[in-house]
Length: 189
View: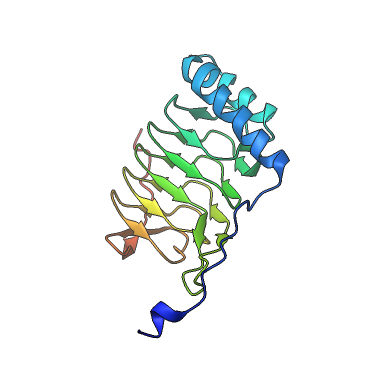
């Protein structure tokens, strides 16, 4: 018999949250499947107000699409004038903070939770994500746990961000690597 097969059974953490958190998550899912999905996005502040009822901190003039999934609203901070696109997943087991004037494009996944693969029980790890102001995360990008994206950065479509993104840097690829510095255009009017 091999050594790997003779090890004792692994004890997994069965309930990593308090009963109150599970009740809050159930209530949120019920609201998300009903009121959230039918709330018209052109009514300013409606979805932001729903999020605030669940403990999110949401700046003014922020818009979220009906298909945006937020795992735990009370772990979310959105700045002013943010736009969160279709099918965005904010898997915020750890806190997710998004700065002012930031766009998170369709299909993007921000994942603030993982498992400790060095432990046979794979315990849950919650690692916050911080996205700065004036950031654009393009379509279908993935941002992993514990990542910081600096102000003004651009994350290219389908990029996989596994380490810090410097301010005003454009990154892309899998894993995401710096491509160039972001330069702002000038109004020619």
